[in-house]
Amino acid sequence: MKPLTRAAFLSNFSITLSGTVLLMVASLLAQPSSLGKPGPAPQQIQKLTASAIQLERSDPPEDLLIPEDTRVATYENLILQLTKTKKFQHVYRSGDRTAASMPDLVILRLIPQAFKAGSQKQREVTTVTGATSIKVKIQFASRDGKVLREKTVEGKVRFYGENLRATYDLAKKVAAVVNETF
Amino acid sequence: MRTRIAQFNPGVSSKQRKIIRRLLQLAAIGAVFVATAASAFSQQLATRQAPQTTSIPHVKCVIGLESIKPNIKGTLSLLPNGLEFATGKNRVDISTASIQDIFIGQESRQDVSGPVGTVAKAGIPYGGGRIVSLFSHNVEVLTVEYVDSNGGFHGTIFVLSPGNATVLKNQLVAQGAKVTNHVQPPPQEQKP
Image (cartoon, rainbow over all chains, first blue to last red):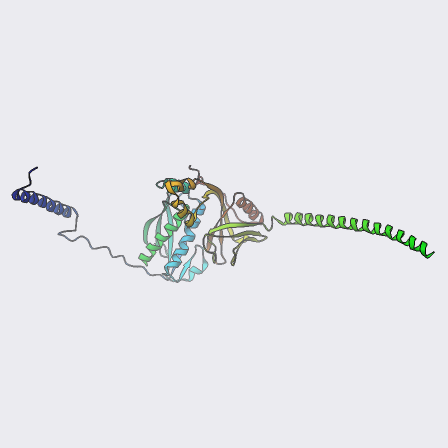
């Protein structure tokens, strides 16, 4: 094989370089709002303020069967996580009569959307199947029923851990939303 | 005469000794009998009282009791007026009147689990940890919903050995705890 001459090397190099530059420009142009026109500014979410929050129990739709231990674990984990955020002076439970005296009370509702019961054994044996997941819509509302903010959150346990760990994951994610919101 | 008396007295004393021995033997047998009967009677009493003060050790409280950390093991006892969960230091009561509902579920738990078990399974070469994961045991999950003095809703989850949750639920219902009719979802751990 003959070694390339200087002219041939330069021509090959220029072709490769120009091709690379073209690819880079094309990929940059393909991304909207990264070049040229600036995209919409990131939405500034106005933070809510409240000194107390009350976690309401909400029943799932009739066609959605969720084991009671999962619902209770979700509720209790969320109470613990809401207390840990330290965003509120009081975290009231559903039905607590003392919450009525709080002037700026926010009510948090969890509306179950989907539930998939997995299997711990299946998860640990196969690694890729048997995940447990629970999806809920969380809704912050004022005392008069006005919805202030809502978001859908999903808790999962994929690899190791008992099925109820999905409720802990869900509660942590809801607490993160509370931290963003308040 | 003295000699006769002397000879006679030893004869009498030997008979007395025999009588005393027999009496002592009878007394010993009687004492053994009384002791056995007393212990059997006390066992009968304990058995009769068992429904009122059932005590189940090594129960795991998954979550829901204030002043008790999640996933702590302790003793769950049925008192005449409700449930009591006791660990080494803490003790929490749930009165029967405050109970709103009771649920029982069946699940299975891995024989080797927890952070240490998981690390140990991961350390077994050639995927042997997965074989260990196949071994599991059935448990009963007792979920108790109750309200506090302010009307706030609480829920507590206990994991017990099979059969115990049903016994506790029946005894709580007999004490007057509220229970509603439930639609049972399919068991979670029926998949192979």
